[in-house]
Structures are given as structure tokens and as C-alpha cells.
Length: 261
Image 1: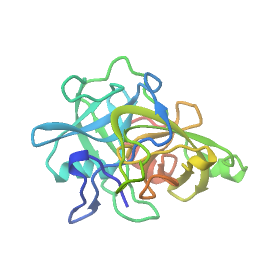
Image 2: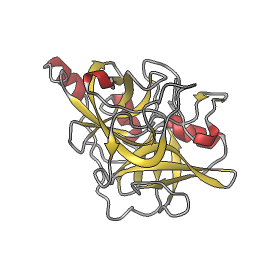
Image 3: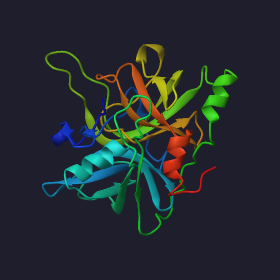
Image 4: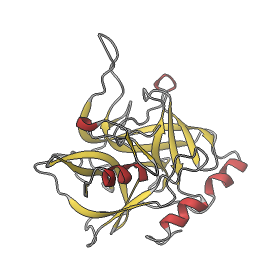
């Protein structure tokens, strides 16, 4: 299940080549980020003449914004352009927007083994005044796992969108404040293309939910993005499933747009 967002357009769009949900995942059990991660931005689409928040992402070079392919594929499917804001709170009337060109991964698919769910938005001119985030070295998480270095490792999720569900008195509701939030998750499992992170508040973890797809999960408190948010449990209460950036497939896509470590 891929979580997509526009609050007024939550839907599932079936395409000829791929399943596109309505972009996804926002911060749960976290706190407002403020100016903490200025290189994390919101991916914006236009629907019936209105600009709306769709997903999250990160500036990884002055002209390249990293996000998820299910976000860009969705925008392409509905005929929307793409804009990015790095304002800590999105306001369609006042936020600074950077128009970009979407590059959906040609390998994007629905395989659980490796979905290729990674995309970028490129800008014609560099984004000034914001330091891009770093990317991990090849195979770093496999190497860490062999040495037991992932046990107890924390990850910092950042993004825009809805928060943990409010349950009681009817169907669950997901509060939306349109600002950038941050939370901390802990390592759960390593797969070939994925990291699985605990976002169980009962164990002290936060995580992501609808609106954070494509957003970063930084390694600890560093400026290096370990993985990007893709999916998780439907109520955003247990697991954040994030796409690794240290794999050969992820690096093969990114290599066309940025210099890799």
C-alpha cells in the first residue's frame, strides 16, 4: 500500500503500468520542526486551480529535490505540474514555490522486493541559501548490520501532513496542520531494499503518516538521509517502511542527477 496525500483528493488511481495511490505519510508522535531541517520541503501539486500539498522530500543538491516515485507518478497521472516549498508551513497564498521538472524512476513498480519508489524534481536554477542533505555510501546499512550496528539505531523522520489518528466518537480522524514536523523512530528490520522502523508510541517511538511520502529518514541526528518514507500500517501506529538509499538500484537512479558518495 502506497500512501498518497492531497487531503481533498485521497483516492487510488489505477494506471496501466503501476498502482498510484494519493500521496502519503506525515509525522506521528513528533513535534514542530520549525527551522530544524530547512532542506526538507513539501511537494505541491495543482488541482482545479488550487495548489495542494502532496508529499514531502529533501534538497540533495542545489537543483535536485528527492522524493518518491508514487508521488510524481500520481501528479503526472492527474496532469499536474510540480512545485516545492521549503517554508516550515505551507500556505498556498504566501509560500515561496519553486517550479520543477519531475523525474519518475522508470523502474518504479509494485514489487515488495524492490519497488524502485524513488524520484527527483529538478530546478532550472539553484535553490539559494539552503544546504543540501547528504546521501549514504554504497551498502552502508548491510555493513552496519553485519557488525550489529543497526540494533538500537535511531532515525529522524521529517515531513508535512497529517498526524497520529484521533480515535473515538466515530471513524478515526487525522489532524492536518500543513507545517513541517519531526519525530524519532528506532530500527526494527533490514530488507534488501527497505528499512523497517518502529513508530510505536508505547515504546517511545514516533514516525510518519499520510503526507510524508518521499520525506527523509535521517540516520540518527546526522544530516545524512538513510532512506525515504514510502508506506507502513494503515493507521500509522506501528511501522514506517522506508526505501534505502544505499542500494545499487537507488544509487543507479540517483547517479543520473547527483554526485554520489
